[in-house]
Length: 220
Image 1 (cartoon, rainbow, N blue to C red):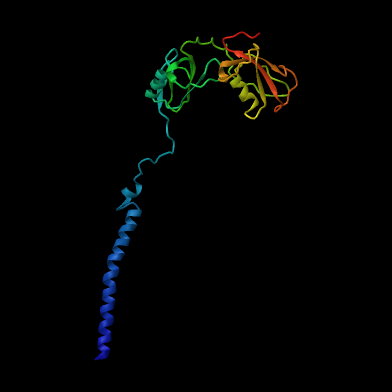
Image 2 (cartoon, one colour; image 1 turned 180 degrees about the vertical axis):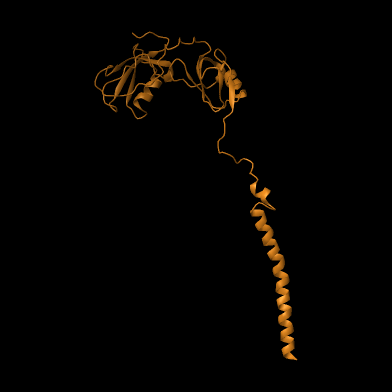
């Protein structure tokens, strides 16, 4: 009696295993069909949005001609056209910062008007509203470098000279008119001469004297 019971239990166990294994085998077969191009092949071959060659074209925008416009208007117009990387500089080479954009007018722009990638950096050369734009090429906006001799800084602003010698330079400012005025806003003062003089031997870090007057004044 006990032997028959164990045989019956063994038969039932094998039947149970077969019942469980059959659906699993069917599911595996269906999965294999999907991988080989049958059921599920469409999902396997579907591309994900955003996938492709990996290249992204930069949108282009049309930059208007903004020469002669107020700086604030020029910036707003350029931004409305899609250009977000905007900067400006003192077209007279004095290194003045544009604190109130409405007080400045555009003399030149780079790049020129036309179609450009919207990521292009747009730079406006500007002067105060009561000033006249310089003629093209009339102002040397490059910053001189210190070599073995003193550079010619005549006509440059004291603020620009600071960048030439560095923030740790020992500089004496001397009012060339003899009035002993203090140059509070250094971008409003220009250099008449230097000591050592331009072209004389000079090593960066040596003390220097700048003889200066206001920009509207003539050097003595």
